[in-house]
Length: 190
Image (tube, rainbow, N blue to C red; front, side):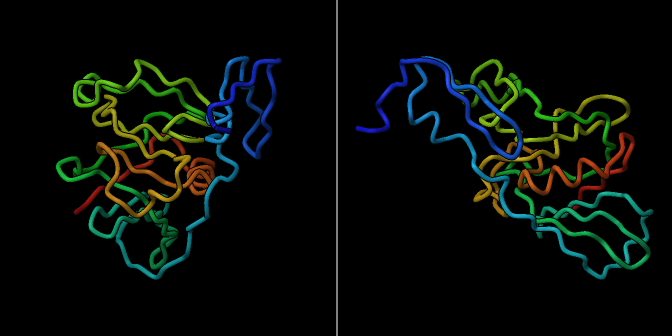
């Protein structure tokens, strides 16, 4: 079958809007087919909402699976997101403690115990489950291990799909990342 064919002549490049990646000798065509060709849809829309929060504050609603960025006294920029599966949602107030473009991913030990097939490390790139950008969420100066991050699987947006992180399309996280400074307050509610 086509997906079982192996590229054996040499390395080749795959170019996309987010950069260029090399698939090495021995990479299967099935692996090449997994490389995202799109950043997914942009879901941002302006919505009237009186929040009482300062402009720039991020408000996440688990119940509506939305992420709002306060624009002014009566408007938010709203994005559709994927949230934690049953048993993995949480609420509270945190801050953006770090920002990373094309992050690597180290599944936490607890996650690897639940899913033994997970690798120790997934390097940065188009197949990384954190997508194109990640905002690392901190509480009292400590990394919570939760992220607001992109995804290479835009079909999961709007679902209950993570282990507590907040998932956006790569198009959305790239836009949010560029406008969100370290120190931004993030409030997560039911």
